[in-house]
Length: 292
Image 1 (spheres, rainbow, N blue to C red):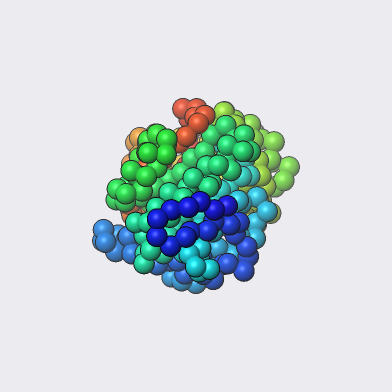
Image 2: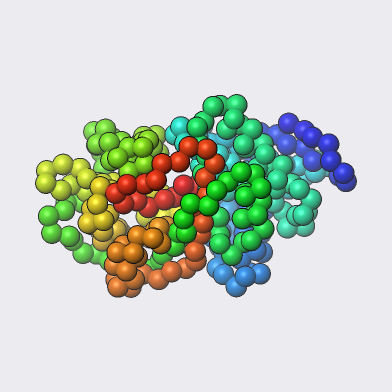
């Protein structure tokens, strides 16, 4: 995958597990640099965290990866979560020393080419609201703003909601989880939920004798779907922790936001959900992942 441009030649190729250290270092440096410029904490607080994330993404069979090189040196990467028909885009990062050379656009175009070739009906992403350049880039590539999302962090709440039972999810629960997700979004995220069940992080909530919601975890790369706000509150209330930068909550869901704030969670930053292609206005209640 190569295209000509002025200046040093940029070469795009598929990512490999052996790229994890270089890509992880760039991820850390890119995210830390832009966050510091706006006085926000970085979503990637350490090089080791960036490398661990890259190891996971580059070795997962259901993530598409593209790496950018200049003169044989890795200068950036981008990813697609293709575990569902609706795909999630990112994280994208470019070495701060070579930014403003259209490398980020090239990486985005390569990922979108993959979406078109595979025939996926829609692609989504979340971007940090303080990063105006990424908002402009995604808009010029055809993404539409859908809604603002708050990243919330704080101590576990540790309470129960009467009439709602929360437990660890099992593979036998997948059909019910798919049903809830289709009710909320119009499509399911079966393979994401299956991964979370195997990792032991997924939870379900039952009400009136049936599953009415689920969460793959409560962190950046996790999502949740529930029939009602009460079901979602039960899941959040039982969360053992809010991993990484925190969980993501749609700001328009005022009852959930107010409930979280009243239980000592705080807003770390605001993000923007953007989509290209098919999009169904969500029903019920949901928490997006950093990808969608």
